[in-house]
Image (cartoon, rainbow, N blue to C red; front, side, top):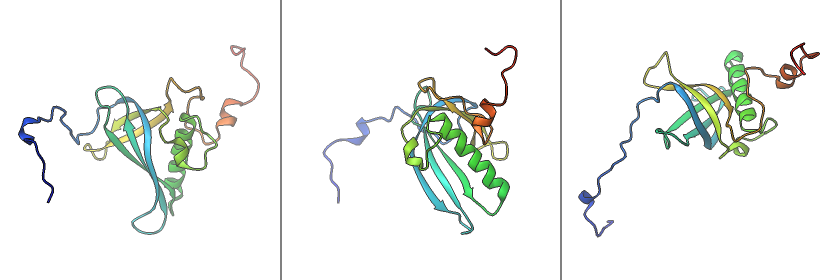
Amino acid sequence: MAAFDFNPSEYVDTKTSTFDPLPNGTYSAMISNSDYKATKAGTGHYIELVIDIIDGPHAGRKLWERLNVDNPNKQAEDIARSALNRLLVSCGKPDARDTETIHDIPFKIDVEVDRKDPTRNRIAAYWPSSKQTARPAINAVNQDATFNSGPKKAWER
């Protein structure tokens, strides 16, 4: 038995927690935890990320992202690997080989209410925090090819 020596009714919870989805918008965030797990069907693996919102009125809220990096469905796998690439670039760690290397690094996320399930959020984009000096994350698997694609244009110097 755990006894305590205070009256709990004197302590009112002033912070109401909710599990409603976050409103669409851009949020400062960081990874607080990650894991590599087998899928329920046992046919692949996913990386599960715990993403903490770190400022603004929703600071302290968490989002969970699952990236199906090993999946029999090639398209699902490609989408997840591309998202992981954008996240790594947004954290300034494009060559990382382990998700632990991106824990506690601020970045930005664009969050949307999921069109298929309006009780959930989905992460639409990752991009560097203003505190980062990394290049913007884009929707390309090969960043170098995108940023170094041939001769400069007339308006580039």
